[in-house]
Length: 138
Length: 134
Image (cartoon, rainbow over all chains, first blue to last red; front, side, top):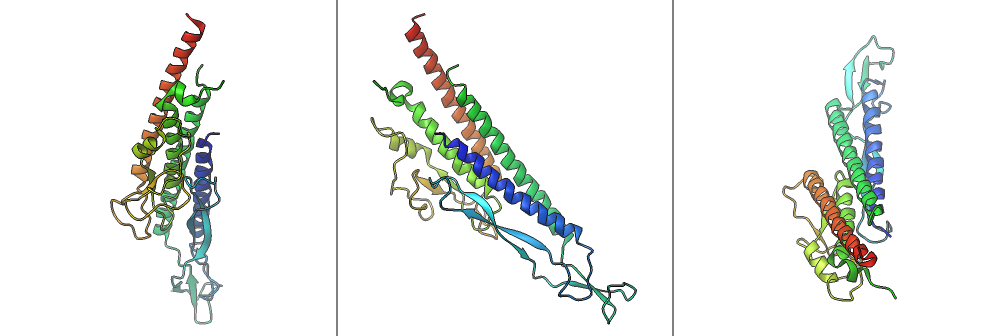
């Protein structure tokens, strides 16, 4: 039994979580211009919150994976723009813009992809170690 | 007749197990680099090895209540003496993982694992020479 295999599970859980994060970032950036007629209906920036998988995982207390605890919508106020010519404009002539901050999203994207790369590297290193272990004594 | 691997390969067989466990802990740190409130952990290798070094000791790490940590105590039920890292600088979300340090520790751990493998390999070829007699 090699506990090195647990490393694969841990790294995979990290990659999965970062993928969700990249997904929400893509969704936020894609909807950065999705205006709406009321502040209630406008798109809100989504962000995943991670949590460590503490118990019942590989059962030895050493490895802690990560999972997405939930995806939350930002509570920041929606923006407002005066555009009476917009077909989506409300009776006052205002359209409401999502509370997506493109700079935040880009930073999130870079951080997520770096973390993903880290996990890939962990997997690769572990794979090499396991292969070397397999060829022990040859 | 079975010969315990410790008698054949000495310290390296035990070290190999510890490197594996440490790889798990460090991989967990890296995977949780963005988890709010996650506290980075590590194994005190010297003490863990000392705990398994007595003759006839089982290869796995015994549960220890001397898992005294630098800051608070590690989770109960852990087998290796885990310790929490002291963060170099505080972060807003309470996460104490320093990705660069963890990466370097993981790379170091991998090299040490390979070193132990190399020693075991050398021992195997030594034994093979002794068995075949040439």
